[in-house]
Image (cartoon, rainbow, N blue to C red; front, side):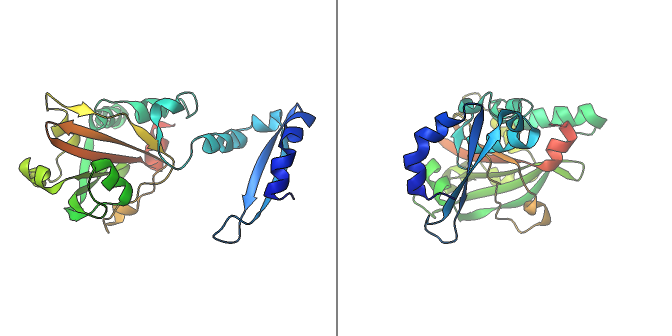
Length: 239
């Protein structure tokens, strides 16, 4: 076991003493502050080529905080890339994939539509004060009863009411957005963190493996859309 200080001083030697091996650093912390020990284990390159090692290396590269999707091309699994990076309508993509499976199209399940506080990172994206109340909408995009994607969308109250978004019900927000001729979409960010919903409905507890977010603009109207891709989506498309 090495302390953090020892690791810093031994870094150059570790990198050169075994050219055919790579080192995995594992941090163990037993307090809120970073005061734990650091273990270093050498792994052969053949070990690193195993599926589990590849997953660990990917998870290390793809951190749990937000990163531009464009920066992860070639890092994330190839099957996931077109789903996480595409700038066209996710609703249409999902509906097409579902119909190719068994002819059954996408179903929107409304989990929550209300006004409530934005989270700190959401408020920053929307350019409003932290915890300020916004229009919130949470849905599950389902194939039959199976949620493939869960989504959370937020907009400033005055702009949301001006576009009568409260009347969407179980209609598709994406379908409405992509009908707007002047629609602009920001660059897409992705994260390995799960998407947390405010709804208390059972479907809102669905886990997500990847999450992405982007800002849609239509005139003065801006809506932040966050989408979490579930294990059922991964299993159905064999990703």
